[in-house]
Every structure is written in structure tokens, then in C-alpha cells.
Length: 130
Image (cartoon, rainbow, N blue to C red; front, side, top):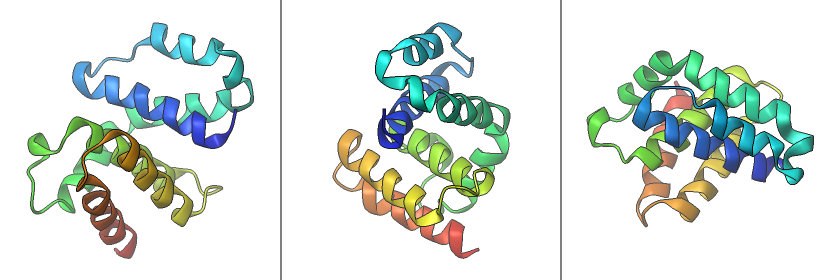
């Protein structure tokens, strides 16, 4: 499995978490057990567990750069994408910042609205520029 596909899995797990605020080990195990996920198990676990552990801090960071929307108005899909990207930028120094941003934009183009990619890009650009 490629890192891109692993990031997709991590995003979906985080998206699910944004609704329940509970870790779902069953869903995690399903992703980890899939044949194509073997190479990226560590990445998926690190991002999923890391975002859950740092959720309040990450949400606070995102909210501080989202002046046009209150946190509860951000689409859950966009929030999940931002959570993954923000976690990677802050805590996964082996991933270049531009890669995290580019992959976040790709996720937005795949899963979210027409305007989401530019919104996410603006938040991440401001965040990185801080």
C-alpha cells in the first residue's frame, strides 16, 4: 500500500472519530487487516492514535486559523482532513510540510466540496506561516 492510500485510511478513521469522539478499534482493525495495508500499518496507527490523543490541541489550532467559520460550521470531512494534515505537520517531521498540504488538498478534491480545497489550503498556509 502506498502512503497515499494509508493517509486515505487514516482520514476515514479520523472522520468517523469526529462524530463519536470515541476510538473505534473494530474499524481500525478492519483497515489494518486489509492486505494492501501491510506496509503502512505504523503510519495509520500513529496518525489515528496521535490525532485522538492531541485532538483538543489540534482543533484549537485549526479554529484559530479559521476566522471565517466557527469550528462547528466546518464540514466534518474538511475537519478530518485538517486534523490529519495538522498532525503530520506538527508531529511527523519525516513528512515534508508541502507533502502534507498537497495530500490534504487531494483528499479535499476527492471527498469534499468544490470550494473545500482552497479553504483547507488557506488554513494550512496560515498555520505553516505562523
